[in-house]
Length: 141
Image (cartoon, rainbow, N blue to C red; front, side):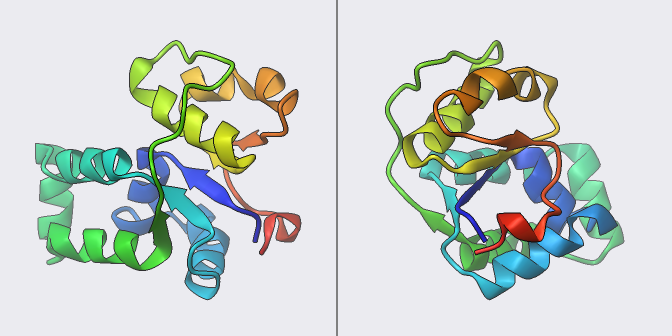
């Protein structure tokens, strides 16, 4: 599996919604610890989102504490220092940290966010692939 950066919605798909489309990514992450790069700010964003009422209700319905999601994040992601500002700026300032980290590490960025996806062609110029979902064995570590 290549090095990846996952936005918060993808992390939710993996560990809260257990979206079947994320199964190949989940399996790859479990086999290749450390290939998912994240920062403390990204983890804090996940903590904040897990407290949103709709997410908390979903977790309660699954009889799953938010800490179980954070444990999965901690098991699969490797925390690295914040990255410097990338050459390109995202329209959504909240998503810039994902762009910056992917650019700094030439990582594949997985996101369903339109503000991120619209940057794919520009980011390709600096060696970063942005995709909606991770499915290809070619993306495997």
